[in-house]
Amino acid sequence: MNTQELTPKEKQEVQGTEQVQPGRFFVPEVDIAEDADGLWLWADMPGVDPDKVSVELEDGVLTIDGDVSLKPYEGLTPVYSEYRVGNFLRRFNLPQHTYDPDRITAKLVDGVLEIRIPKAEKAKPRRVAVSAA
Amino acid sequence: MTLMSYPVGGLLRLQEELDRFFGKPPFDLGLAGPNVFPNLNVFTDQDGLVVQAEVPGIKPEELHVHVENGRLTISGERKAAHADTSFHRRERRYGRFSRTIQLPRDLDTEKVQADLRNGLLTIRFPKHAAAKPRQIEVKAA
Image (cartoon, rainbow over all chains, first blue to last red; front, side, top):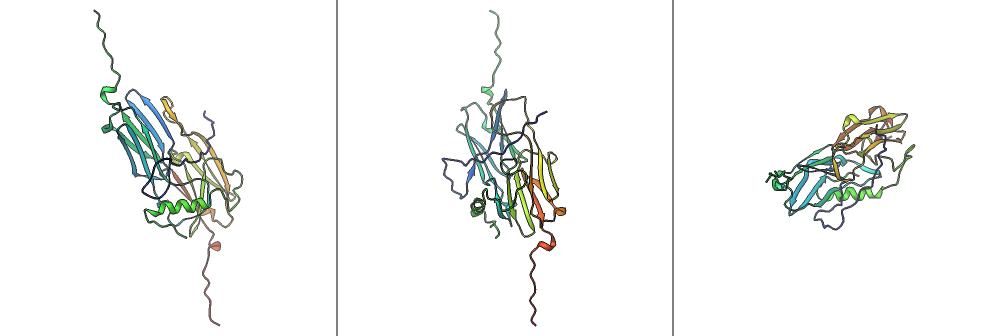
């Protein structure tokens, strides 16, 4: 039984990028795993609507980007704050020509973005038959 | 004051409003203060008090919201999925959590509503009818 206690973590602001839109961006926390067929990536993006998230792989850079919905804040006046609210942005370098940008799939469920990045066919490990001489 | 729903300036305005109240409790948070999961943002609206928490990856059935004796408790467990996979990065945290705060006395805790959407928990407590502001008509003598 897992009795580990979950602790809160302060959101980190995105550094080193210039935005056109006003408003701060935060770095989503991620888990990244690999299996024989590709990568899995999970990113926490609470408050983002599924149609406001974009996932893009171009020139070996994976960009994930989600705009927080302001609808839950309509008519509200803050009186106390422990966490900051903002859009999410993060980029990762992936080895070039290893993954197939056309077959990436992503879904956002319960505020978690799940991305599947399949390996390109030529990058998959292949079993080479060794024939006896 | 109401937040604008204007799409461009809205987020910045919300962030500035939240900054003004960052880490300054206007009321007694009771048993467990900050640094216990989940972090909370507290708002007022025209009906009463609104408490929000970001709980991504937690299903509604794994999240418990409990109100008793004027105290709000949010508890549950964020379970680690894909435990059998080999990870390159593991930044997301898992485990059990429970946080209790003391609520202001003028709220009608019988009429609490909780809603979980896109990993954002919103709990609304209306004020007792007697505690709501009323306009009193002034009659000429």
